[in-house]
Image (cartoon, rainbow, N blue to C red; front, top):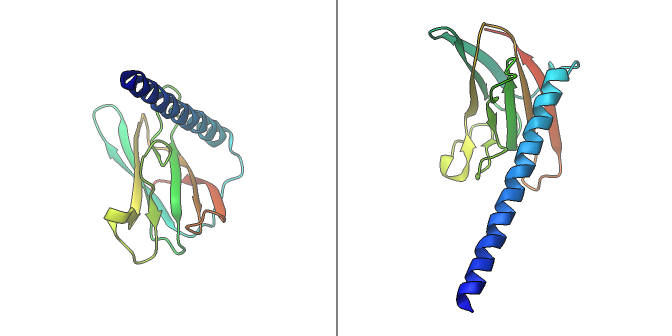
Length: 154
């Protein structure tokens, strides 16, 4: 009887985990499609964002850096897109177990407070990178913010 309960518990936990991953993948593809099709892009946001390209063999690696938050930013979800039709876009916050927070003048990695975050990917040529970022302005997750941004090579 104990073995049966143990097996049922494991199956139930596995099903919950699979459902959570499926929701993450659904969100991933929704955000990616929105980035591809987004026409109206934000140019005013309460943080700094830049992209740096490094040439490798026959492609470029890009690093999008989001930092210097001017407001409290909790539970960040972010994705960068550079015409990656067949490859995976770099993403933070969809599949991670721990959240990412940016709070002005606070760094406490043990509690998930960082100075900045980075999204790294590859592309065939240097071009503008589209970035999606969403977060809450409060720990209670009542004030939601969302931006679609196009970042030019600096």
